[in-house]
Image: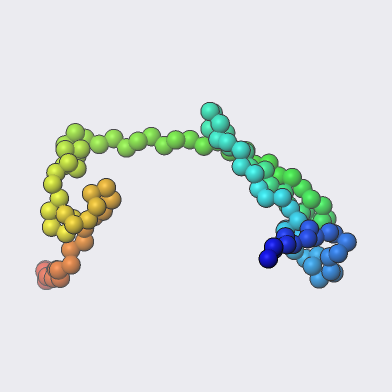
Length: 111
């Protein structure tokens, strides 16, 4: 059995109660870029207060964040063999291991 695609909705066939939310009539947003300068454009359509379709173009600049610098010793420590619970986890996640034992703290008396 062939499945028929739903017929395209025409504005004259709309019911009066359907006029509240007409966002399904708008084309989907289009994202262009980022280009070599890091400029990205987003083109979207909306209805204004009067019910007219308005084209909105948003231009933004994207930047690449600088990489964090680590000391040579910190890089060496990352290469060390894992031990304890960290030995069983994936080495790429760089997750901090949480101790499961109970740690009691004694508060000294105030003088």
